[in-house]
Amino acid sequence: MSLDLTKKIFILIPALNPSEEFEKYINELIENGFNNILVINDGSLEKYEKIFENIKIKKECNVISHKVNEGKGKAIKTGLKYFIENENINDFIGVITADSDGQHLVKDIENIAKQMQENTNSLLLGTRDFSGENIPSKSSFGNKLTSKIFKTFYGTKISDTQTGLRGIPISLVKDFINIAGNRYEYETNMLIECILKKIPIVEIPIETVYINNNENTHFRPIHDSISIYWRIFNSFIKYSMISIISFVIDISLFKMFLVFVKLNFTETILILLATIFARIISSLINFLLNKKFSFNSNKKIKNTIVKYYILCIVQMIISGILVSTIFKLTGLSEVIIKLIVDTVLFIINFRIQRIYIFNE
Image (tube, rainbow, N blue to C red; front, side, top):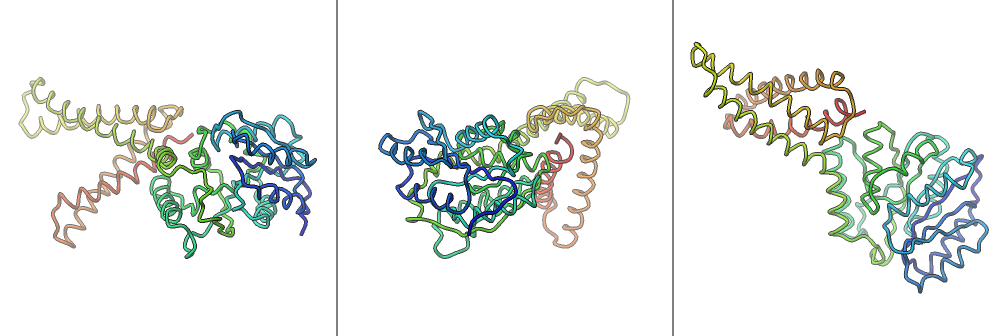
């Protein structure tokens, strides 16, 4: 079935040492109506040059080559930049990225293309089902784990965070060129960018295909996983470190107040004043450090500080209510209950600050 669209679709495929089946895949795309195809040869070995030469002579295709392997993210950005500079983008609906290993069926690319007509301002993800029996265990476990972690820290459930089949509408192409990351972490950064900018993400189920148990993948399980998880955890690690620093400052100021401030008050009043003084200073430092380093926010202080302190007060009230209620219901140690409750609130607080307080 040939593709019939009012506007055109630009197909972008990063390729590294592709199999001989890759040329057949390109032919199938052309046969189904995709006439604007760009392949990025991301530093493939010389013995694969013939494959790219055969693709390049097709009038529907073009090939750009990196002299050395620069990574999937860099290849995608190279392709997006070429698209912006060499095509009349007003003639296109958008760009679809696909992998070169044949795991993205042409019928699924067609479906993404058709869905793009109705979702002109959304990132479209071709999502795989990892619950099947024939899915390699490392792929199933890795994707499910990443999905759960992503939801925990960004509040959005994405079934397939590493899918390479994505529909990028014209409205988002220029922004995506500037997203950080040159390898697989780029695709994670793309999702984070959409969440922070409130760009809708639409998941479209696709057939799950693994050829030769995914032996041809260029994904490096340890190195690339570290890059991906570092990107997911990066802000939270900074947020946690700043919280520790703020705690140390709070305790230090509390002690200094009691040692150096000589007021004719009762011990109870002095402790209360020391607590208030230390908490005001430490929370202000926490606010400024998080704004600068955890969330890299350029929002004006006056637009964020009131929300920040309201969140702090609400969190303290909720913590007190929950600890008291759970203690009455279970009889467990108040300290243990508070540790659990405050840990959960700590993560929720992080998400709220990221999305609603410091997000620009």
